[in-house]
Image (tube, rainbow, N blue to C red; front, side, top):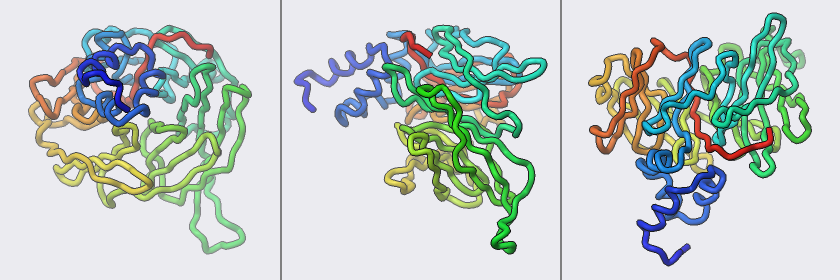
Length: 339
């Protein structure tokens, strides 16, 4: 699409959009706009101009902190201390749980505008393994929450006693339209196959999570799942999003490779040498890809937004927590919603 405007004028217009829904729509208008929005400096500049939040929520126990490469919105403090994050969406909608003396209570919320609402609880008989949330529509707001819970008893296929032992995971989906949880087909993991630590990530209507041996893809619209092979065997893997696609960072010795999925095939992206990060701390580990040019690192009492193109622009943030147990990608505008 040719707007007739110079590219630098288009960039200035795009970097002043205040709605994430509008911004996501612009990504599919044309390839040029999509490339502009995914440039490494675009999101930090957008956040400075508009007040949009884009970064990570760090959680350790009852403590939750927000960090971002954009200094102007790092004072975000919209998260209540009595709620634990279970899942985060790309539109700033969170699924959380509040623990009480006798039971737990599930909530959804948009912390950027301090709006919260309780939702019906799922069946809490089994231990929660994984929770994900996908926003399917913004006006009106429509979202679905996936919850996988584990039955600790091993199962055997009685029709084929020689078949592998497996563990059954109860699959439930909450739909904001019906305001109900619905039980779906159980997920079976073979003995020894476990989920990697959460969170899962969302791309389109799909949620992705890692197990010991596979990448699992859940489509919340069709309420179905599929197993996908990993790009490499016998390596450490971390699930990330990369320019609107599901991605995996693999680590073999000091070589890090970013793989992203296109048409159900793994494509190799950038390569990194882990030793580059030793200047911050020998214990620095990658916790995410903020975008194609900025890597998010965790150290001891600090996190770093490492700029791959201009290391002078890297940003270090000191923390009050030694380590963070869970890291959630978080972006949000300040648009009002009806939860």
